[in-house]
Image (tube, rainbow, N blue to C red):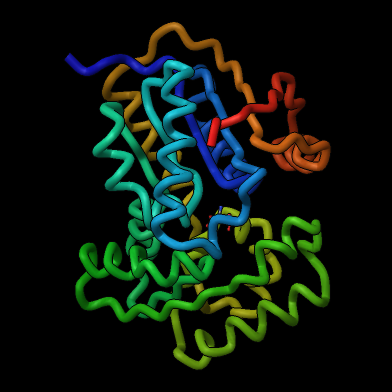
Length: 265
Ligand code: DGL
């Protein structure tokens, strides 16, 4: 019999995965959540596949030691490179954001789909391959936007400089006349307004956070829930006041249980 779910582990390279956690708190509020932000080694998006897989296995290993019943890989870069390795290593449901994001783009009716993400995510071609598997006749246009993560980390969500940088990255996608833009990075939902203004009303913007949470909810509904109280703890590989400041603002709730962790690397 499948095990019921009482505690879910969520990891990201840093703060960005809170976009996924927020949707999880809305959709499965009674389950306990253990969030790990690998803030000491952020960004993942510029690193090689080998390193991303190694870091991801270490993050998941830490969460597994916290007795989780399910793992959510909130980081697009980690999902793009490490999902098969994680599914192979950990014998609990492992949900990544790539499949859910690709599904959201296809469900939005996209035929000419733009995908933006970190350099490593785009290089992996994971989104392209997943969208193609779901909708073979879709045309896909991928664009790495490496400078957007640091701009979000700086808190420049609605800033003229961010708009200029985004416009430069998005110009080829505008020229390609895409109808749907998939935000394939944890940080980009925070730039949704800026990106929508640049792309114009005719382009649908989709992200994977909500669709990932829906997949998680369907697993929880199927397996059943036991014992959780909706307690959320946060574990960071580098302590950061800014993480708490930005995190509380973004989640709209107090981050009560925040701990420093060492992944023993
Ligand atoms: N979390 C990463 C992602 O979604 C963005 C930040 C990073 O590069 O680590 O791809």
